[in-house]
Image (cartoon, rainbow, N blue to C red; front, side, top):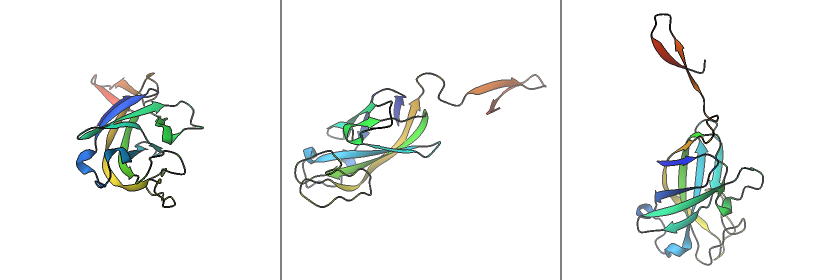
Length: 161
């Protein structure tokens, strides 16, 4: 599980090498497209993180951007609000030629297929998936719980009242 805080940059260490799909190219020819899905509202964000591939895992860095307009998935930028639980899926993308992360050379979703060329990335498939808990930074993003006393004198915690 990834744990992070809203409105901040974060680094995740994700196991990718055990499930690597395209082993015919060098590690330098591989990048990972990460899909984040919010559990509450179903919103989706994609990002190509800055990464360092190690023997069994990949260190992935993400940059928080407050403004949704101009969010650049090719530059590891994410918004990821509201706080709470998110799912993540990591897709392997491989290149035969030069790795270039832009809209003409790297797919923006796991289903996008670009015009085939040596310098165009191809989504090889899903490498791993999991959960991410995004803790609130200011204390106001998540649903608040309130304690109400019952008439019997026993206290219970009620949700959403």
